[in-house]
Image (cartoon, rainbow, N blue to C red; front, side, top):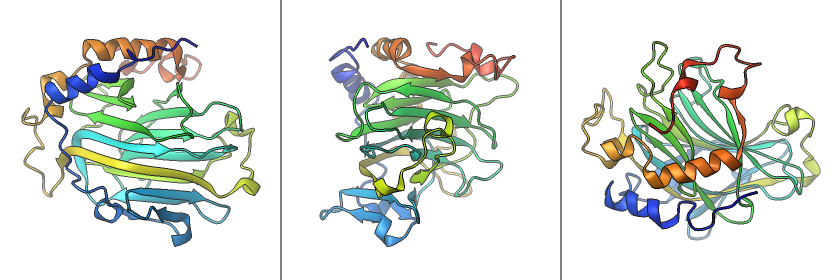
Length: 298
């Protein structure tokens, strides 16, 4: 597989973020888990490091684990570093996502990173998806250019009224544009929480459900650190930054489209790492969704 070492994003885009957009200031001022999140799992499925900077979720046959931000956001930059389940993780899904509801409600908007477990020696797959008013079906799957179980890597979402960009280690892997078409399948009206969870999905996650979870390998553990939320914090009935004001870097012109450096990295990802794209699945969609006709390069 072709691999572009340093040009695959490194310093160029970091400079763009800091010089054109302004330095990333954290809306989440503390990386303490208790300051930012609430957990939902038995105590023995959740651990924090001694200094509180790293936290781990585990899955066993009795229970999984998850957490949710205490704050909702509408637009911004959201990032977390994850280290995924190592070894035989077939059937296990680690999800890191944004959602408008604290449940899988029928009218939810959602932006997903889902890491699909594997048998030992097989590559991890990363699935992204977008939901609007409870309807999804916008999946893409990518392979990664590194082993996500060996170390922490950052997974980020840039969300504004013009585009949603999914990043891995600040490399843009997916661009989802606001097409302003009649169906307007773009989530931009409702504030979202950030979630993560680890759960058993062996009916579909690995080779379409052919590979089942081996519970003798449990517990399955994913770890997290360095949460960043630089976005518009929602305050009822609505926050001051609910409209497009361009006061924030993520709502300014340079964040509405990919930079030239982004485009090169994105093109490399498209050539080498895309495993599945709903826009190319004509058996599933004989008439492609309107969104598929919009160029991510604009």
